[in-house]
Image 1 (cartoon, rainbow, N blue to C red):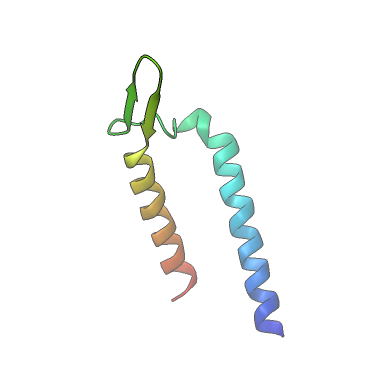
Image 2: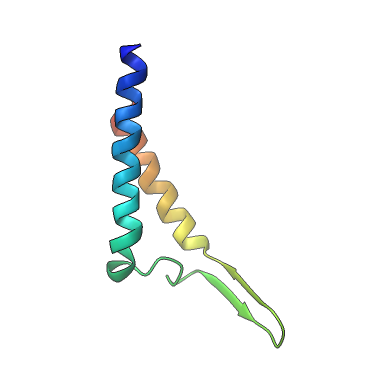
Length: 70
């Protein structure tokens, strides 16, 4: 049972850090508005795909996962 407790604590810390980055990070790094994000606006519709934001988030999460789970 102690392994589950440790895992829940680590998951909680990760969620708090991600929440702070999302809340305060929009002022520092404009998520969704980076160069390479696709934004097409038509007359009646719009399409937004933040590909560079997805790549950056993926790299950061991979680095964090490698640090914690080695």
